Length: 170
Image 1 (spheres, rainbow, N blue to C red):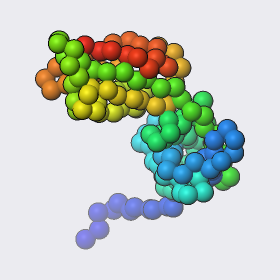
Image 2: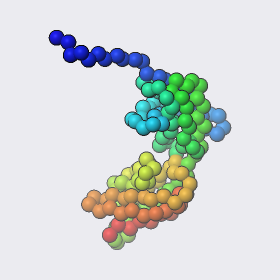
Image 3: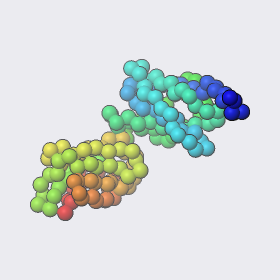
């Protein structure tokens, strides 16, 4: 029995290229995401040992490329918009700033295994046994940090690049 509905599958578009640092060295292990300009879900790929990426299954139109490189803290200074189907895209990443410090309790003791994140920035870490943390690849300017420690939470505003942040959770 026929429903009268037909499904046509088409092969999606591909965006491919390479991620390099400011000196031109390839950056392996970088996650590259392509988000449709008009909205929709992101599709991504990881760069290989040569810094190359290939994102498949994209719809017709433009996509905005962003990167996430937790190791080394690399970032794109600005998102890059290209047409789906673009080949040979060169993404030059730069090192972001660092935010580092310590999460402490009311007595000044370090809180281990607390989560610290940059609100809206896609960067998060867990504190070490002494409560210390280090977040790399943060964009310049003031940012909000969110801290979760067991049943306690706190948000504070800090300047990217500050490596002596002390957040006390009461």
